[in-house]
Length: 109
Length: 114
Image: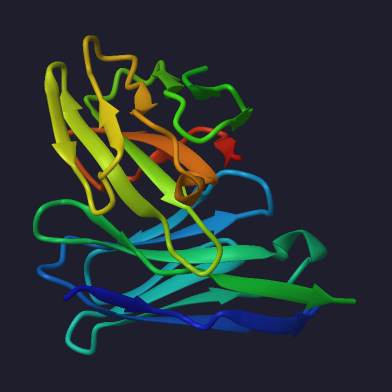
């Protein structure tokens, strides 16, 4: 079966760095997405990785290792507005997005 | 600006009633999707469409139907609403070619079945 695992909840301090991990087992792989979802709102696209390595976009970076079935999202200089759920999703061989349950990130002052 | 809208944003209905949730996008995307989101679960795919007159079942399609008569709209119908269908429903769309096929989401519809 297809499976995506990520921690349910994480807590971090304003101004710090946090890494949210995602491991996956899917039928085929055509890329991995990270989305941000604030409470009561729709998911919004953060990043996309299809090749191994690190993609940096401002305070957010995403890493992929296809051989290990592993990705992480790195958030630097945390701000209170970063409090949200972070969703990992894999585009499988049928170009369907398989979603993890999301990681709720709580930022404390 | 292009967007994807959903209506209604909130709906309360009774068990056994038929309910239709609307989704309209102005991205001119061929691909459209319906998901439901429940606590403790990731987004689960209900139905999807790759173009006009094309519809496909997703992971949790029982009790739901869709139709695609034009590019912009993909309405979702609950044929006979059940309490298990109380959820938040998201519509999304994406491009067909060129990658990376990121999906753009509507604001969601919160449906309560009593």
